[in-house]
Length: 83
Length: 374
Image (cartoon, rainbow over all chains, first blue to last red; front, side, top):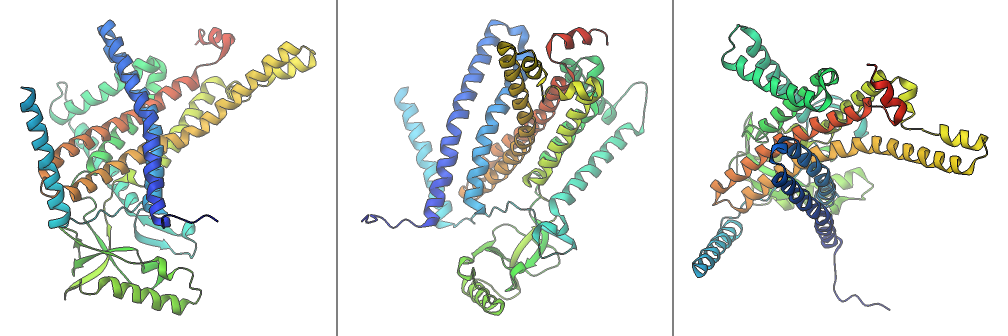
């Protein structure tokens, strides 16, 4: 028989779930955005005349990476406030 | 030098910690309440099924207000036309020219002028809506819905407000949290009603003075993108137009072949050539994946805008309740939200533009050869 060491309520587990959702979900996009901006800066240093094109594409790429973090955020908000 | 930096940093952190402690435990800042669903202002057709209830919600009303404002600005701008533009007309022309240059720079002169109206509408409308939702009129003035024992008047959170025709929630409402779970699962309607009444009684005891009411505020104005339905409708418009442009410039069959490219597979089977069959199968599978990406676009478009704007409002709300004493610090977050509001509108327009450019360009060598004739 398993004896529960701690009484964990469903409410507490809900918040743990929300924190895990945004915590793990923010990890990948963070790496991605850092990598993207770093590479864009590198490209800017090599080719400063291409600044408008690089900047536009960088912002588009960041939007794609950020979208994943936003999904995690929406899930976390849903767990925290709706259910 | 290094020691001084450490002292300044530690002092700053200690000061912030003190502010937080004072705000939360001494001054008891109000807790942020987040309501994901938009509130109903006028109910047109009531139904027991929530999905079939037709109502004008505050986000819909706000969308109309933003539209009217945008039309008014446009009307005022183009009213006086002169050879030498000046004032508002000049500013508007500059904005439009900036967007036109951006669109034609990515899509080319001919297609750019075709895509321009939709992209410019997205940019101007979403930016204006996002920026307007930062003004103090939003989320503060509205209809006060009383709290009652009847099921549709029962809420888990409520605030205490002064009696009056127009309700303002400023500056420090008293939050009331009601134990709603206790009354779930009571089959008998009268019993449930009595239970809810008792729960309200228990939660509000000692908190309501004379001339005050308990209820929730349904604000007249609420940021339109904090309700999932608005970004979803933007996404539907965007995807519809992208498909429409694709079909109208490539023809239905050639456009459909992007998503169901099984021709090579069938030819390979009939010619009994295993290599060609496998190649055709891979092509078909890739086109199927492209179809899924097309549908997933709806989700990513709508959730990106919704999540960003909702997170922005929650950020401002939580920061206000965390650091009441350091309200000037909030100006920084306001600027961040101004930036995010514009960037999200830009991303929405730019992504629609990129997808439209992809949709009107044909795949494969034959497509490129034909493109030259246009």
